[in-house]
Image (cartoon, rainbow, N blue to C red):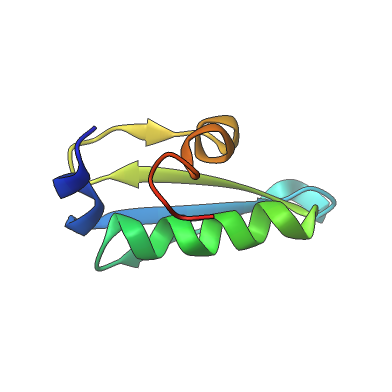
Length: 75
């Protein structure tokens, strides 16, 4: 992933840890940067697991988001 990828579209899906049936819907974002900001907030709440699909088709897991958010200057 490159810094230019932060300005491309992405879709964020947040899975609630304690939701009955554990269903979720994706939400589109104009940029990966915006999706990552919402994902980080969800992780920090302790109640959600965010997954992101980038415009290029990469799937970013909650662990990847946590591990890489600082290196992208997002935390």
